[in-house]
Length: 594
Image 1 (cartoon, rainbow, N blue to C red):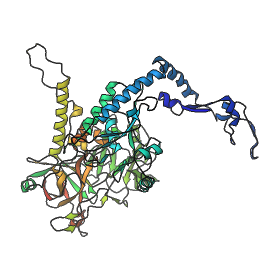
Image 2: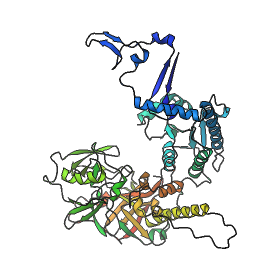
Image 3: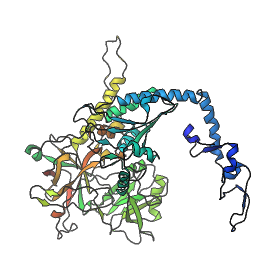
Image 4: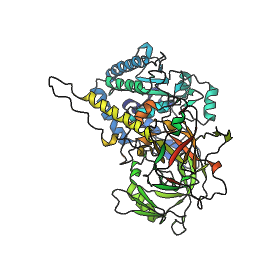
């Protein structure tokens, strides 16, 4: 009697356009007790049931103006289907593809024989009238633990592979195939999981699945690309190919080796470029003025490089002697000058208090006047405001601290306060770790170049040497946006994973807050804001922990127990100098497992 159809589901566009087909003999059964624009012949407001609906079925039920501009696309959609031989031809094509994909997925196994993929549905029956070209699945590690769909989706997007993750607005099938009880669903919701978020695992169980949809435009090559992607990132070739390797205890030689502070990087404005001094004072929130400012949109949300990569080109110069910060950017004929001292009433707008949204939290800050904001708005091409952290704001570190001093068995507190940074006061990386990633990216580039070179025929001339990596592939410490870079003689890569505490110079003592889980901001080239995912993708192959996090660098904060209440940082400042000796004063257990 009725058929509901979505043209969006048929063609992939236009969004939100569908149709209801109704048999003429059941039309009188359709009644409605309300009306919308254009569906009545007469209505009297204020009196119940005084309206006369139009006679035609579509006239009565199509409220308001239909989306006629989108409906124009339907002609092209029907023409396309006809040009491909009709729906039956498309069905045959996609059925072959999905069965091939199903077979290839079932062949993926870890080193111990455990299957990587669990496929949901009825693909094993090989009947296209029972199972369409949509394949839902979940992934499992060699250990039997589930792999969260978020990391799969984000890595796939970097390879231009579009998949959908979650429950696909089908809670019944999701609950059935994932074997989730009603109590499981309630527990997930109580723990904060809602439809559409990125909480992909709860107590070892997935909260959603991964879906691949195939259409007329897909090819065999697309299937092989997806299989190669899974094999590269998720199939474990041996017992240590997926998880971060645990280091044995650091030797005395490794602890005592000469290491020094190679770079200091201050980011005065969140997500903008770094300022690199040769020495710099500390404050109770870390490096003085680090993330003291942020740029927000009209809704008060702090801008990030992932959505505004041009922030990388807003470059600060700080002068402590004049207490000034000068900001410049390409294509801007002028610079803007900001006072470093406490905001004065003359400089701030009348409405000088604003709520700033950073990583889901709401914080307070002072907004600058239009005379300053116009410069940022002109460069970014949209209305924005510069906000400075409120003097009363006390944001706590979000990272988990190592809270025991092994030498004294005493509890240690991390520096509690941060500015507008996401998690901690300092991000520390080592030169050896940066070089390790850079070498792997260069090696992969060289290997790819060699593989794509034409085969040598009869010419005796040697093949040309591999070309150097383009500038976008050159990995530097800037790409990871650290605050401190530590270098040393024969320094092992990723030795910082095990640092529980460290001393810089004679007076600065830092405590680890655990490894830093990296996001796709690493894909933003800090020189020009271009998209450079090579380092992030390379890290994803060998720097993921058992939770699927891609780790690089460690969070550090000042040790509160060594900053006594009588110590005034203004009168007795703690100052870091490039070249300061760095000593590791404590080590943790497993690397990468915080």
